[in-house]
Amino acid sequence: MPLPKSLIAAASLALLATAPAWAQAEPAPGAGASLTLTLESNGDMERRLALYLCSGQTETLRVQYINAAPNFLAVVPVDGQNLVFAAALSASGARYVSGPFEWWSKGGEATLRDLMQDEDAAPLAECTESSNTP
Image 1 (tube, helix red, strand yellow):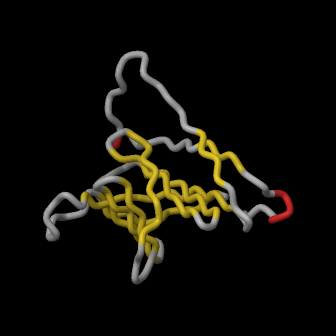
Image 2 (cartoon, helix red, strand yellow):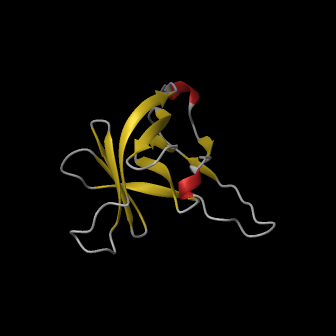
Image 3 (tube, helix red, strand yellow):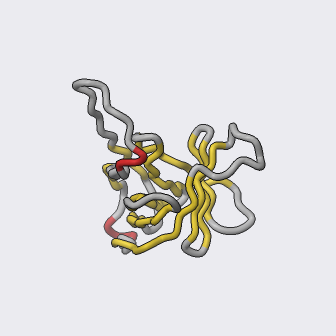
């Protein structure tokens, strides 16, 4: 649900997402960190959690979408880390990139790719959105 413009000068969003077991790496002993990102916007801000079922996996993938024009972000768990993806140009759908990874969603379907792989390589994950949480 967007926040009214009158309530927003700056918003601080804690980026927290839990990776499913298949996407988690073993953390280093004593390791732990969090990130707080402050985005300023003259418009409405929206934070949405989407759950995806990915082919060959039993656990859901939790992806956060943060829209605070002109910034549009997705937080996607990859290899046990929550990566912040920034929106990139797309002819259709919503395309986000983070380092060598691309998260592309359109009409309830999404794919995760490693752009360092060959163009014909299979995606790392092919997913279908299962539900939305406000």
